[in-house]
Each structure stands twice: as C-alpha cells, then as structure tokens.
Length: 332
Image (tube, rainbow, N blue to C red):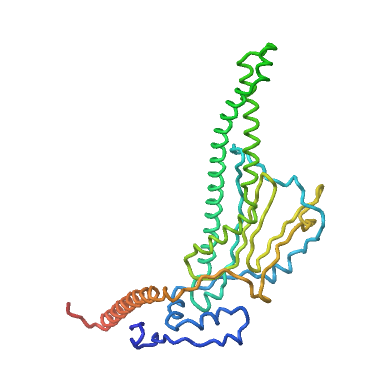
C-alpha cells in the first residue's frame, strides 16, 4: 500500500476538511484540531500501539475528601527546610515539585500514549531548573573572584592612607597584629558583599519555575498535550513559588501550632486554575507541523512493510500447519 499522494488506497486522502473559524470558539477541541490535518497523517498518528490507561475514580475521591477551612493567618516562618550541606556564601539549593497531567483524548483520537508528552515536560523542567541554578552559581563565583581583587586594591589603598594605622603602631600595636585585624575586617566586608550579591542575583522561586516550564515546552519532542504545575522551594528564605498552566491546582496547608491533627488543617494558599470553560483547561501542546509530515510518512512506510512481512510469515506458517495436519507433504 502506497500512502503517498496519488498512490491509491485508503490512505490516499491529503485534502483537508475545512473548519469555519467564525463558528469556532477561541479554543478548539482535540477532534477539531485533528480535523484540519490530512487524513493520512491522522491515520499515522492513530497507530497500532495505543492502549487504554485506567483513570482514577475522581468522584469517589471528591466524596471522601474533607474540605479544609480557610484562614487569614500568615504562613509560619518556622516552616523552612534546613539543610546540613556546606554551601558557598550566596548560593542556594532548590527543592522542586513537578506535576504534569496528560490529555487522555490523544489516545482515543490519535492512538498516542498521552503520558509521553507529560513526561517530556517534567523531565525538561527538572533539567532546566538545574541548569538555571548552576548558571546562577557561576555568576556568583565570578563576582566573588572580582571582589577578591578589589579587596587587595583596597588594602593597598588603606596602607597608603594609613595614618590611623601609624598612630595605632605608635601606641604599641605591632605591625603583624595590625595586618591580622585588617584582614579580618576585609574578610567580613567581603562576606557581607557576597551575601548581598547572592540575594540580588537569586531568582524568585515562582519566576524560576515559570522559566523552567517555558524551556521544557520548547524542548519537548513527543506529540501530545498536558497541563503542568511546577513548585520550587527556596529553603534558605522559606519561600515557595509555583508556576501553573491548566486546571491542576495546589494547596498550601498547615496544621495548628499545638495539638493539631490532619483533620484540622487550615488552607493558607490555593493556586488558581486556568480554564477556557468547564473541563477545557489551558494546556501545553506539541502537534506535528507540515514539515514533519514527510518524516511521519517515511515511518509509516517502514511500519507497513514490517507489518505486511510479519502477516505474510504468519499466514504461511498457518498454511503449512494446516497442510501438515491433513497429511500433505510439501517439497522443499
């Protein structure tokens, strides 16, 4: 079977079914998106490898869950995460939470495992956060190296201007003691400068999560669509930032300060869902562009050839078994 244009067969359908834009809402359902594609591409996307995934009984979970009570009480500053790692002044480590919720309609309409694109997003976001933190650390290291040079120049300047040091030397302080005091003072000033530079260069956790999701979106390779939410915790400052696209949500809950139980959790913060309408969330998506259609056609040619060869081999084996069962010998 030749799937190319003009090759004949059921896959020879390159014409597009028109969609009247004036009659469409500002968002399109998955079926509307696929309707604009040539039917040969849709059939390639459907493929034979799609399989159903069990869904959670969300209605049952909603019935069993107990709604938390809201409170205007601010978050407790004691809820920061401590770390025992040795850290360079101005550097910080982030703890990351990632959640991607794939669109199961891809499996029903296109035969694509919807989990693959969501996994692409999460992997890309995790790698992007690590890359951003390493870049920030390199910038801070460069600032510290520059600060050391300035400190040495400052020391020479102080020695030239050191009328006060001469006066202290005359009062009985030795030259070695003066140098030690001067070095200690410079080290203290340098540490404070590094810390201030680190605070200025440190990204807000929410901005870090947003940039990581943006990079992951452009890096994803698999076709599909997914909502996504990424949370980044700056344990040093006790700040938790979130970036969200879609109807996924996140709750920040807190127990009472004394004698509390899980049933008495209070709601501190809730992330707002983003939806066009009921059950129609904003989503990241990667659809095959026209310049990728030839590659998909080449893949389906290879697949159809392998499938036809396997079917012919299976039919030949079945025929041989049937003839052997009937007592007919075949010459070799």
